[in-house]
Image (cartoon, rainbow, N blue to C red; front, side):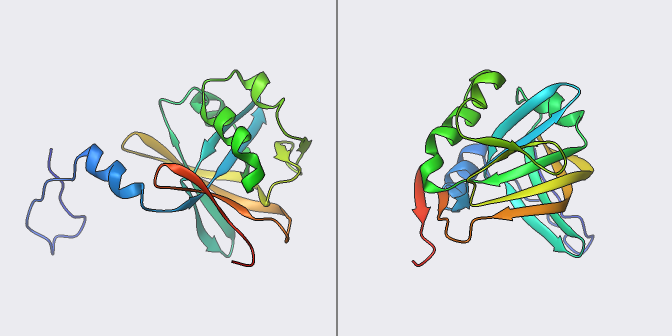
Length: 176
């Protein structure tokens, strides 16, 4: 497989890096650990994600990437809203549970979950929770990129952050 640039100014065809090279490179990109949750016709669902990014502040928009092969994909595909819960260093068990193969009902037994403005599960002691309406979904390679407009934010100004770096958890303290 080869890739070409979107603009005609680049005429050379270059091979992409291998999946292994990409994963190794990404292991050095520190990222906040989040649990993304929703509720809808298919019930409550959630997954662990580090692929979360700000898009714009006007209107306030985030994106989150979800593998189309994930067990929760269909639930999120049928949803209209979600909450991005950014975890603290105390939430490693929640991250592992939502990132593993645990049944949905068991995932929500860990931690204190409250209802957000949109009705999605929100982690009560998250560092920050972004309550969102899904505005667009784009399929790119193996993932869906979900764009969502923020309608409410709950934040703990004293919280630290759970980070994923070099294939392991780390924490970032507010005063560090």
